[in-house]
Length: 168
Image 1 (cartoon, rainbow, N blue to C red):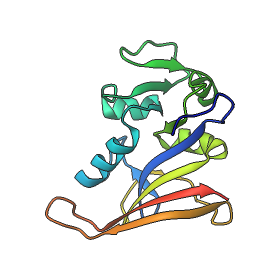
Image 2: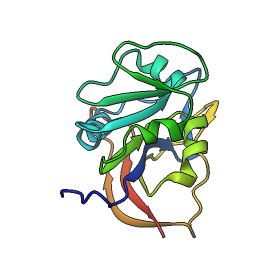
Image 3: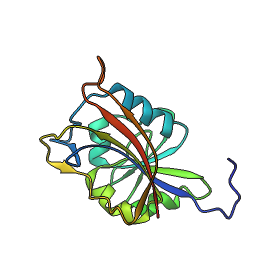
Image 4: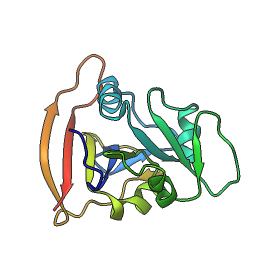
């Protein structure tokens, strides 16, 4: 839907978590779920994604078909990415866009959740050994607007749910 110049931008978090809110260990994902990767690509392609430097390092390259903004305190240049000092600086670069995605990691999610209008949440129905977690989601603050549950299959080792939450 085209956006009027005065319409506010939607800030959305996109994240996959285990049932225990786990998102990573040793700067790596805890699972390989092709359907979640496809879901992430479908939602974020053609959009801007803001991520922390550690998340960028774990990915290893700019995400294709997306504008990549990396938040870091370091004074560095990353080919194919715009580098900013804060989430707010990253969002300021996106003025006029209809939806911008926050793609992690844990510290970025914590800093961004109060700025967020929507959460695209994949829950992997398994508890994982992890050292990095997504913050608790306040059920009073967020309303589930869609959910699609999926069973494990030959390519996706765990059952999972795609959930969309909007701020109440």
